[in-house]
Structure formats: structure tokens, C-alpha cells
Image (cartoon, rainbow, N blue to C red; front, side, top):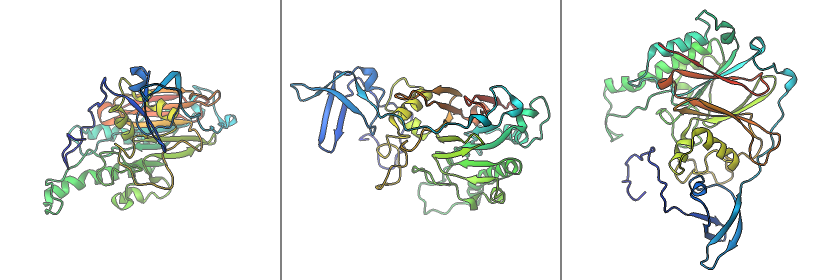
Length: 361
């Protein structure tokens, strides 16, 4: 961080890995450099993870790691799904879907109002056609952050007055988001998470829910609208399917300190490390939490693990290291503003099958 001036915005797309990187093991007693490791290992781990290392101390005072000598914690237990309430894969009449959308980008230069209206009309049942059965099977919408395009004040000095035109420019997208969510919440339950570009809430993890006073129309739907945290965890359906995920900041941060890893591979790693964002608070800002770490996977393994605001849709059913029975459906949710795609998770499918649905204006 020596090359970053005070107040200057960090380049979150830059990769800080180099051929001279070394791994250092640290505990309460001190630090020790690890050697005899290949670049694929060095480029795939980050600061903040808990590991056990097997090897010997060499004459240079470095710890020579044995082959396959790095061990991660075993995964936590996973609650069994109630399979008697689940339908067979592909049985659409008995399927129930949770819709995941991220990166609405309302108020941005590339935002397409017609595409948003198509999404709203589809979810509220105003579009007829061959997909009506699928449409009626959607039981919840989860907006996974970046609901607004990033907004900036016209001046760097927060004490300067903001002109009326600038106020309208900043407030207009929030009103549009409120009306969009309120329209959908009259038909199905809606959960909305904050994201990195949502300027009406802090960017410090865990991000707190968007204030309901900023979304007055949506907040009138008391039984169907919820403003929630980021990361967010919930359970749904008769099968009691557990979801856990975030708006993507942790994965963006991990990309800066790893090489050649896709979103799915990084999500797999966080499961194996049992931590959603190990780089916090070093390079990902988070609240000073001294009593406990809310980002650890210490209680139970989720059935669905998702990450929003990614370049493309990806999914895999992953069996964590050290687990013979548990399996997690990992989902990379694409940016809706760029792709026009939402993700549907069938919570009545034994393997939690996942599909996409695209809206082209």
C-alpha cells in the first residue's frame, strides 16, 4: 500500500501476486517462512486462513513442507434435507424456485429500464406464454447487491452544499429501486441485500440492511419485503434448504491475491478454509469484531452457497474436502445489468438443480 496515496481509491482489479512471493506461517509464538512449496500452492492461498502444516525445520531456519503437507479444517456438519417433501428432478409442477438476481445497476449509464420492466412483469405474472408454469413456481426473489449504480457527490468536500439537480440525480435511482421492489413484493416475497455500489449504506462488512425509510413503498409490504444484511443466510421450503451468500466483494478481494482462479474455484476454497472472507480486515474493510468472527463456517454447511455480481453464470455441486456425505450447490450469480440473466434454484430438487432465465429488451 506504499504506492496508494491517502484518500486515493484502490484499484480492485489489480493482481498483487509475483514470482517472488513466499508463504509465512504465523501463530501466537511468532512467524516462520515456509519453503519447498510449488507456485500453484503459493498462488492459491491468502492471508487469514487457518492451516496445519507438516514438515521439518531446515538449517536456514525455514520450515520445509512435506508433499501434501498443508491441511485445512474439516468442514462443519450439514443438516440433511427433508427428502420426503422434495420432487424428482425435472418435475416442474412440483418444483419451487428461489430467484437470484444481482447487479440491477439502477441509475447507471448502461441500465436498461425496459429490461427491468420485463423482469418485474415476469415475476408478477403479467407476461403470458409457455413459461407460466415456471413463473408460478417462483416463491422468492433475492436481490444480491449492487442494486444501484455507483453514485458520487459532485465535490470531494462533504461540507459543500449539494445543488438541487445533483440531489435529484442521487435520489432518483433510489426511488426507482423502491418502486421496482414494491411492485414485485405485491406478488412474491422479496429480500434485498446491499452491495459494493449501493451508496445508501456503508461498505464495511458485514454490510447492514438498507434503511427501510429509504424504501418507503417497498416497506409497506410488511409480510413480503425484507431488507437484509450482506452476507445473508436463510432457510426456506418444506425441505428446509439453507442458503448462504454475499454480494461478491470477498471474491473480488481474493482475486487480487490469487492467480488463475475462477469464481467457482474461489468459492470452493472459502468452503475448504471455512471462512467467507479471510482477507478481512487486512484488505477487505470490516467492523472491529473482538468477541467472535461472524464470517466463519463453524456451525453448519449451507446447502446453497452463492456469490453475486459476477461476469457470468456458473454452478457446481461440490463435495468439500474431508466430507464423504455433504454436498454444496455453489452458484456464481451474473450481473443482471450486463447479462440480463437471473438464476433459479429448485428447492424441491434433491440435488438443488439450478437454471438461468434471460431477459432481452
